[in-house]
Every structure is written in structure tokens, then in C-alpha cells.
Length: 367
Image (cartoon, rainbow, N blue to C red; front, side, top):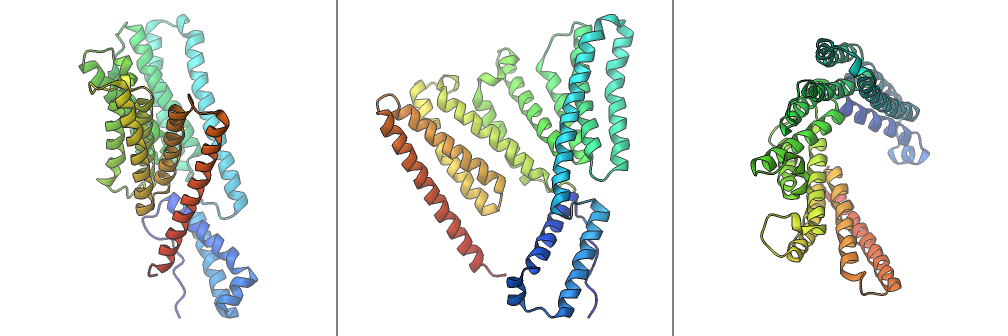
């Protein structure tokens, strides 16, 4: 029999490689248990072949993608991610505070030169880091500082030349964040870019209606539509190079959508339809519950765990906030909390039953 292929699958990115390494590591741990060995009844030769194949696979994945092949390595990687994120935030704060402290002592040509060159230099540094490292901790750090410098760039230039503040600055900020995200595969920058673009389109529509663009957050129905657009976008285009990006689109779009509905359910006066405020709030209360339940079903159907978690969280939030508005004013406190507790138990039982039905379907599905 020929030796199994020891090379990772072509077209795999680091996230997929990490998932593959985790599965192999867990399989090795399970096979090491006496119960699994007695069930499979592997011969010494078969066990030896599996050990050789799994070690070769883990070594190939670690050599090509620098993935974590042990639990301790994963803990260290999480610590490195946290440290790099905190370092990037600290450097962004240092840049802003530097401008505040010394900006007034610089002449105008030097100010313009600094705000133009700083993002370019940081972008060049991020490019150099990306070429040297496979796990892009320093790349993400430098790219985040470059984004902060670019944002500060437009703010400072507008202040120097007394340019009126408009919503148009949000567009290049969001586009630059998206460029960094797709260039280096950075999910945090993708989320920031999507949020900036959402803010831009909401502010632009608000300005077109004759309002101050800074009041764009006061019309949540803009965000309902924009959240849906962001959620649907990855369905129209496959992300072969960045397969983890669609989950970011769904998370940002789902959160934007649900938060907008929740705000309208609490404050219906911000809605466009000329209805009674109470009717608007009741409409969005019911709509929020129905859409959250639909999101749970859709997430289960498509195996989108993030959408299931988002839908479940907002379903509970909509349910309990509505119960508070409906019952708190007239119901005895002990009875209110007793009913909430009973509903919590009922939800746990319902989700447990759903979990059991999903398990049965998975077990009955053909291999």
C-alpha cells in the first residue's frame, strides 16, 4: 500500500490549516485512550502508520502555516494575539497624544509632511512584516496603527486648512481598512472597515435628507437595511483566499441589524413610518423575536455557528426586555422574577430538545 499523502491540501489558508491540525491532534488523543483502541482494534502496524502520518501532517502544517499543534502552543498564541492588539491600541494612543502635545510647535509644511508620510511609512513597515512572518502579529499591529494614522491624517489636514467636517471622510477610512484587511487577511480590520462604511452610507443618506450628517445614528432604520446588505454580501462572492471573512460579514451585519431593531423597539419615535410610537415599538418587538428565531434556524441549517449564537442572544434580549416593559409596572416583583425564571428553564429545555434533534439528524445522515 502506498504511503498516505503528507502534504496539506492546496489552497488552504492558515485558519483552515489550524482547524485541520486541531482535528488531527484531537484524533491522536482519542486513539491514545484504551476505549477507542478496543473499539477500533487497530493492529500495531496500522497504529504505527497512523502515528507516522499524523506526525508528518502536523509537521507539514506547522512548517507551512506555523499552526499550533499542542494545547500549550494555542494558549501562547492567544496571549500573543492579546498582546499585539493591546500594543497596537497603545501605539495608536501614543500617536494621538504626540500630535496633541507637540503639534502646535510645528510649522505648517512640516505638519503636512508628517501626516502624509506617517501612514505611508507604517504601511511600508506592515508590508515588510507581512513578507517576513507567517502568523501576522506584527503585521496586524502595524496595519492598525497605519489605519489610525490615516484617520488622524484627514482630521489634521482638515483642521490645518479649515475644511468643514463632512461624512465623506468615512469613505476613505473604511476603504483603507478594507484594503488592509484583504491585503493581509486581517479580520479585525475587515470588521472596522465594514463599520466605517456602514457609518458612511448612513451619514450620507442623512445628509441627503437635509439633516446634519452627525445625526446619522438617530435613524436606526438605515442600519437595518445596511446590516442586511453586509450580511448578504459574502453570499454573492466566494472568499477563496480568505475563507474566514464571510463569518465577519455575517457577524457585523447581524449585530448591526439586531441592534437597530432593538433600538427601535425601545424608542419608536426615531422611525420613519407615520404611525403611533407605541405601535412602532410593538411592531419591532414582534419583528425582533421573529427575526431572531429565523436567524437561529438559518444558522443551524447552514452550520453558521456565529449566526446561531447571535440570534439566540438577541432572542433572549428581545424576550426579556419586552417582558420587562409589559409586566414590570403592574406585576408584583416576586411574581415577575418567578415567571422570568420559569421562562429561562423553558428556554433551556427547548434548546436542549433542539440540540437533541440536531444530534439525531447528524447521526442519521449518511457518511
